[in-house]
Image 1 (cartoon, rainbow, N blue to C red):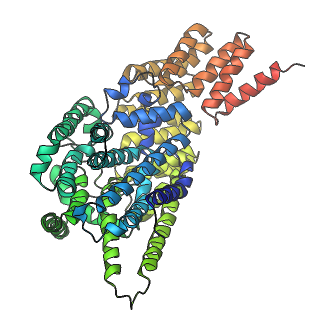
Image 2 (image 1 turned 180 degrees about the vertical axis):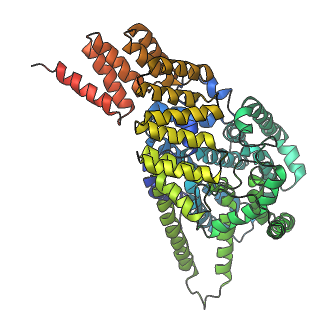
Image 3 (image 1 turned 45 degrees about the vertical axis):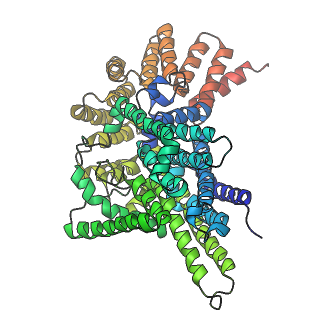
Length: 604
């Protein structure tokens, strides 16, 4: 019995759901805090210009806003969307491979087995542990969303050549390309790869491509202009971590390191051991290793170019891998030299190449040695998928605990300041303050230049321990290093409140808001001080301002509840206390307030 396309898709989806079921317990990690929990642009869907006009990834921010509207800082809805995107990409990949293998250019060899080969490649790609970083690490949905739109661009073109309404499929392809550009700049290679795919698989010659689809490619080229606008308006976001003006890394340092990184990528596709969230990959300095790695990668590129001439289908797979990785693995400096999520889409080509190679070996193996080659093939596939699935589930478990995740990084890679700093943050969120301070001090030892983050974490730990004087000294030291750091002024104000020095705290909260008017917590703190001074109307205005910025501010809701309770309006107070508790189920004060008022309102 042969596997049908519908059965194959269902099995792929079921495997993806099974492998990523435990991802829903994953917590926010590293850049999630910067882009979600500390990003006011995400907190309010009523102000789309905040992310449409100031980001080079507006579609990612829009998706995060939708998640925030659904579940606030509860991560389940974020993980649900990440998984749906991954499953959608897996379905597209399966049918793109299947239909491509059925095309005449692929030859008669693979046509009878197109569904099974596409199923094997897409299934392995779906459950591969490398993909955990793009699926379970919430903010890296940028990679999987971009991958989905990239695949949809190619798929729309492919379907347009056989569908009755070819124009609709072409339009879908163009729209997908534009949406991909609004997701991640790596999409820049999509029009080029689509053009080469067309020439090799569909048109057969550049002349036919030009005659049949020049207007289509004109529209695809327009997506480059759209990307240029996004990068222009979101240049502050983009240039902070990438580009030739990025001053922490030269283009030469980046370029000479990438051959070794590419070889690492190829290795972990085949043997995914030692995967970590953050490699902290160092700049290459050993010229012997640089030369050897460059020669190896150069040889692979030469083989790809040769195959494009002699074996275009296989050559396209090599081109797929190198071209999609080109924006992040060439000469454009990026803050991080290596990250697993960059393999999300490039890996698909290598997986398919390995599947085709394994199938070819089995086909050529004499039946006297392997009498049931089809059964052997399914056993091999099942073994690979089972092993990769177990590894992926294990990776997902690490994402459920910040401390375990960063301990995993430190156990597998040379220690870095960032790893210790993130470990410290995780420890502090678990209220392990002394351990957090110790980890942050190790971070400072490794990189004394990173004082801002270290002092923030140490000060926060001291503040939570109610060692207000020591916390104040730490934040004063921080503001000497970075006087315009808004959150530093906010936290210093909190230490002063802890010491009862309210007028001094007000000054720092106002300075914080002058530096960053979107700091909702500063409005809440100012409102709290005014409320103590019995300036209820002014306090209410500040709480409402905080809620305009962050509609789910539990502290603002709770404080509004206390205002209404003070005005002898218990019903309205209860509503706000309940809203605060709903926005943050871990907010004990709001829950206790709601319980007390509810009991008071019960008939006696």
